[in-house]
Image (tube, rainbow, N blue to C red; front, side, top):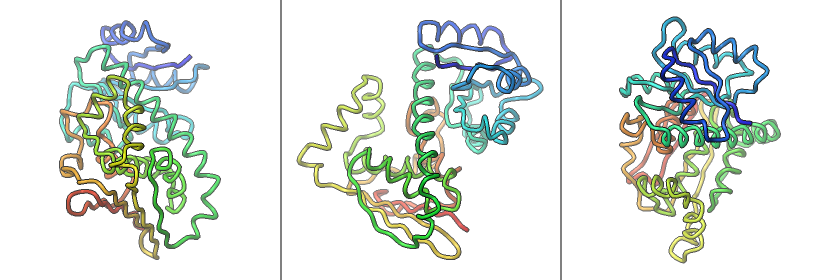
Length: 294
């Protein structure tokens, strides 16, 4: 059973969440304050899989709650979906800095809630697997100072993200950002899937089928993503170059409130805010360099 913890000081909102998730595989626990939510997280025998957290609450609000979660190693990796009526860019950016990557802007409907919960759980499961794999390779791969690699598929991108994370001083910090940039290079770069197309394919449940079709198509089959890694005394840098036509990368450097509740499209902004000290796009956006300073 997958357990969702909903924390909101408005009982009506909690009843809505329970109603929206009633016919799903999710079990819902509720708390009417940050303090009650924290008690459930730390004392309950239930394993919490995802947290739905209201931003504006008396006492311990959503941001304060995130700060507590971030500093508890047993709870820090639980995905959090922030529920808020304040969908301003600055407030979303504040949430991202504390580790909130998913948003629900009130009012929302049940279909949107279920989609965001599913996206958060899927991303969390992938990141959990990657973090476990990073630990196996970190000590040996940290010795490499320069490397050139290439890949073609999403599976290779996910595997390579684990490998490359081990080259950085703090692998867990960069693993999310590396995954996002490498996957983007395949999806939106070499395979030319637009933001709008991915949203439509996700809604129809056809995303994986379309990825497989394009990878096999003659116009895409030979395209590869090139990766150059380099480390010196002051920094670790990674340059990722795809063979696509580029995109309007300026639009995605920050989370746009209009896209905050989409199931995709946050990766660049989150990676820039959380995973790397510097992110530089070149030209049409088909090449990006990510830097962490030592």
